[in-house]
Amino acid sequence: MTVLETAKMTSKGQVTIPNRIRKLLHVQAGASLAFGLSKEGIFLLPCKITAESPYSAQEWSKIEKLASAKGKVYKSIKRAKKHIEAL
Image 1 (spheres, rainbow, N blue to C red):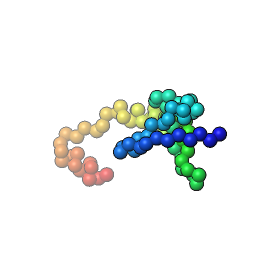
Image 2: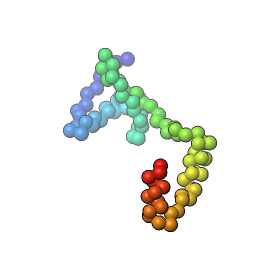
Image 3: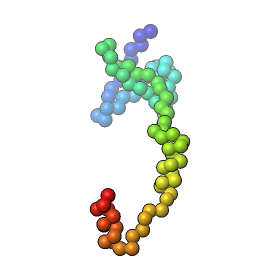
Image 4: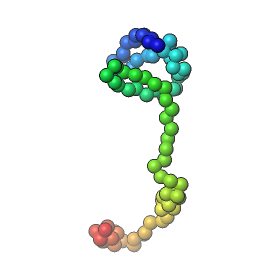
């Protein structure tokens, strides 16, 4: 099926997807869309975006433990600087 609709682009690069196309794609306000480019032209697909953590549950547990641990306290600036220089 080939459906041809036109729209104007704003100075900010925004384009309103024509109502007929939105209905054919079954997309509503707030929907995520993927854009692609091929030899034939630009294509537009509805998609779902999901967040995926880069860390496993076990890694998050270690990170939280490290973040909640108290750091070393130095009695003077001189000792703190000495420690930093030794790193």
